[in-house]
Figure 1 (tube, rainbow, N blue to C red):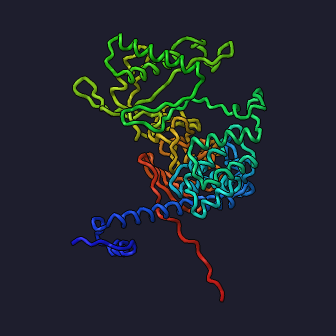
Figure 2 (tube, rainbow, N blue to C red; figure 1 turned 60 degrees about the horizontal axis):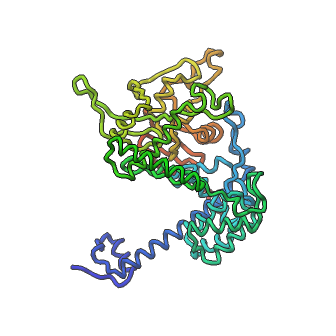
Length: 480
């Protein structure tokens, strides 16, 4: 029997009682429920900004001296002030960002952005901040404005940011990306802000905002293995690129390609890039980054592809899909075959590395064979929720290597052994070295981290799992 609820409260009561009500909701009930859930989501997002700002308040730069361990660290560097919002906002102790991020289940970079937006809104965009906290403006829209004012070029002064705040608040935050971009440009012109380029015309405030850019959206990879490229260039450059891409597409068709025009144009753009890096434009053999004329040398593009393989008689059979180490993206075997068919592609096949083998070195320095094994095992920085590729990370001794153990004839507590090593990006390496964060090895490529406030996280090749919450601090009973 179907029952139609007249109020949302009745529906909630039935949900709490465990009764199935999905099919019993009327259109009005569904809309009411959706509106309430959205209001609850916005309220929670506003509270999140407020709490992030309060967390920053608890960690001013003066707290650095209580958080950092000055006796530790061999050239890694100590904690320093970290400006994460615009001029006029308070700075925060750098390492406090990590614990906020792990509690929220986001990366340190995302946590830094959250705190930056909260401080920017509270200190430089107070009208918008008030509207967010009162429910008049959606937090996501306010954060979009904060992101624009933080990263405007040239930088916005507090007065310029206040003018943006007044304009956006006047329309209750109903501003889109295009309008916001024009508003920031007008702000720069009105306040006669100087461009970072000393050669720019100081009277030309609007044009000092250079819109040119080329952005490869490599974090948004299509299931077919493609990415989107967005660019804004000079008109003459755009016409030249269009002409070159059109010529390349026609050339591919003449050589027998049956792909669509759009596909041939996309491939032709890749041909342009590979031609530039393949030509001996500036002393390819130079081992430095610049040749004798001071010009940058053309560089190879190195990609690391990993595929499962099996032996079928005397031949090797690869799986249809693999993993591209750069960006941890899906890779199709057909794509690799197409790359290898290009005469300018150099293919290097490396032997299989046993990721479970225990490799050891006698000293502190980590040999290439051990480094490569740790990189392939960990794939990314092993700090909770960090996604920085392991190939660009430091290789850290989980248990610290004792440089005086050999001379004092003591056992080495932290040997250079695969199970005692983990990939850490430079920030989290410094965090582990200079704060109360610590981690233990619990299995091959598996680590358990503990934060200064007792939160624990398990990090393994599949990702990060929060463990039991920290125990409640003991409280002495209050006297009447």
